[in-house]
Image (cartoon, rainbow, N blue to C red; front, side, top):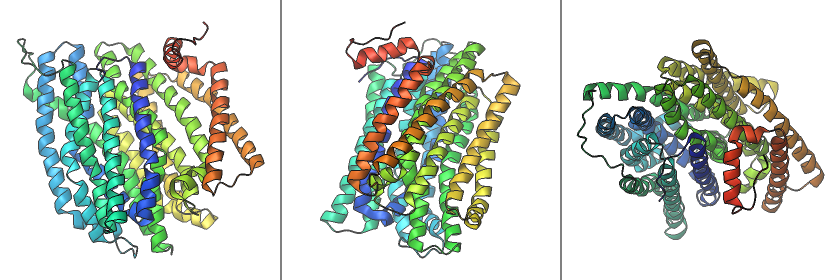
Length: 548
């Protein structure tokens, strides 16, 4: 258990490495899970999990990120008493909200099931959906407390324990998902709804193990709250008002992010049914867009998730100290890092869409096309998450609402029209839903950056320069991979051919992108020579060091 404070870049790297591992596990477990439960079970799982994520956003009420921000602020000002009281008050608030969210989810599970499935003549029924929704509902009582404890540690810039807890949570969750579904269906020959019900309950058990770990980390790091002799002048009422003020924007960010997938899922179900698609195909396409393609795209999203853990307390500290140059530097650095890492991953997965889909979910006429476009939605989703977090950290609450709600409403409004437009011009109509999401994210990012520039005089010269330079190795890598694959002519619709294609492309693509980026000075600028040397030293046991 490593309990020490971390700098911005170090915290970002620690958080990102942990999240990448978590997301890789989250990607890989779906291969055996999908083979166990099939596409019908996968659709049922996606219905319950998307609803759970929305209610989790409500029950957490944005408090974990708000607490990270408040703890960082009070810690910078040396207000230990106010800091500890803020944590206690947040726990009290989250208790009431999470219980309320759990009751709503449990009682209205059948109504939720009917709303999702509508009149679709598919395989899963409203009662099946209601059952699995009730199975996942206990997690709404626990996970908010886990999240708020992470926020407490992140506010102190202790990124390590928070990152490790995510790994533990994911491992336990995956074990419950795979073992539970396998035993129910393959050993005891139970129903599909029971297997999925046990699978979604993995969220509760994973959260329980992670929460116990974090409580121990707080004790070991001497962060356990003590009664302070020095009482800060700020009152509990003022602290509560500040918690709510900080939490609401995070609620908007969280819920809107989950509503993108849920709205796409519902609108795709309704629209494709009206276009005459078979019920089973409609369920498969909708769940692929809302859940299964995003599962693969987790590796892209992990960068933004890791960065926000370190970004919030770092920007808040700089603002508290009125170090505006540092704020601008961190904004440009975060945007540059997102593009530098997310772009090649998106391009690589797009090139490998058939191979990756074959390995994860077997051969399907719809899946690869969905994944090939979804990777770019993930890229713009990363930028949206970072821009929203930056606005929140700078106390631009109205801007957070404007950025988040405008993008979501635009996505919802364009979903159906673009699907019909794609059908008219001969494209696969369901790709219109993903295109609408990309447009929504893009508009949100543009609005956020434009307002920050106008009101705070934030300059993006470094970011624009980095994006332009990143396109060179990224596009060259994609071009080479397409050329190589055309000569190899491996059958990507077989497991062996798909695996071989991925291995060859990953090696060639990685060498090309890293080599060109290093020669152009991109790696040095984004990570920093000192940090890069430190990483190389650890990886090579001190045998390799970059020249000055």
